[in-house]
Image (cartoon, rainbow over the protein chains, first blue to last red):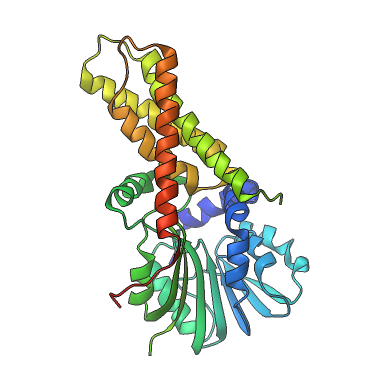
Length: 203
Length: 124
């Protein structure tokens, strides 16, 4: 289960999230995310919905469940529901222990999520559980750089970054595979640090 | 949310790196006494440079998370290791900082152009 300290950290960040941390990412990569999320269809799970800034990138007319473990984040997300042209419901929950039944979703979308999940493999296994066998996982994530020098620098900076936000050195490619997914597409957005992954449950 | 052109954001990236470069050379030059031993000077210079990189990255974070912070951290580590506390003029110290900032950001830019796009892995 996610530690209370982690929830408190993101609760605290919620108030200024849309004006600080999120702004740079949205200005740089809003269109990239929109292009990725346009592939979402059917019943969609948006993981770590945060303040709901990603609602604007979801294709209209879909049935979306947005989950986040921070109650404060969801309070801000609630204000953005009316801006989505489709069915959208919010749910407070931990990605490492989702309350949904097996094989419910056609598409799962994540955006800068698995840099913060305490046990990313456990979280990804949960996503595999709630995803339909033929479903798709669409991820926009930042990860540890493959370059040894930059990767080392990210290792050094991670303990500091973790105090206020995410880890910088997650090996998400390995974690996705460990959780039982097959990666069908990998795209470098900035260096090999900001990435798109598309995956489906491995057979 | 206001959108900016890629050229404007690229300008912010280069400007940010050049500001970090200048602060990383100028602050140690102005604040670290020449009498200090090399190891102490290096430690303090790196702290000053990395602190500057952190603050400038935070200030410019509404324009991007990684594009300034990553070159800035490499730059501050690099310049902090070789603090200029000799008889260099302030102008030359500033010019070295500006040039280093531009060069490191250019290298990151080129590296990004090389890596950008679809990834083909052959390790399964």
